[in-house]
Image 1: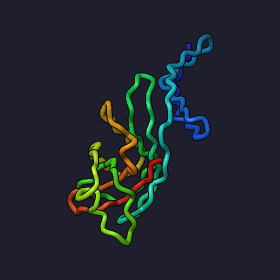
Image 2 (image 1 turned 60 degrees about the vertical axis):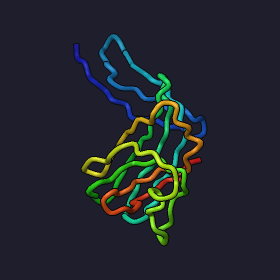
Image 3 (image 1 turned 45 degrees about the vertical axis):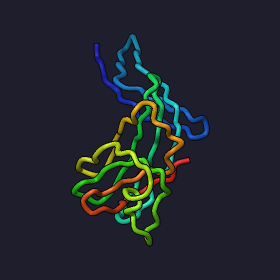
Image 4 (image 1 turned 135 degrees about the horizontal axis):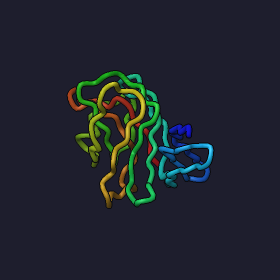
Length: 155
């Protein structure tokens, strides 16, 4: 019996607001078993470069188990000594303004550090009972330099 493991990437539909994520599918000549999870896309936004060249998208999804996560997909940014992902009640800063507003005026929630290599796929748990309506942006923030590398406007 020849078994192959297949990993299927996240398929997101912004029009339906639903994503299907299947992992560890086992395929043989006789059976197909798939562990599928349906996830609801709550927010989807493109990252905008602020103080560092940055690309990628931010997706906030609610999983079948009720948990909520923020995913950064296709991230490409400069290495930073202390990069964090924040949800912020403030708007995405513009490059002409000081990015320090995320720490000085607006309410924010630190979801965690971005480890090297500063590219690819990252996922962060959003604490239960977090009121996402309070947050207007998702930011990549450099704690050491006190600047916003990039931001995404949330709906």
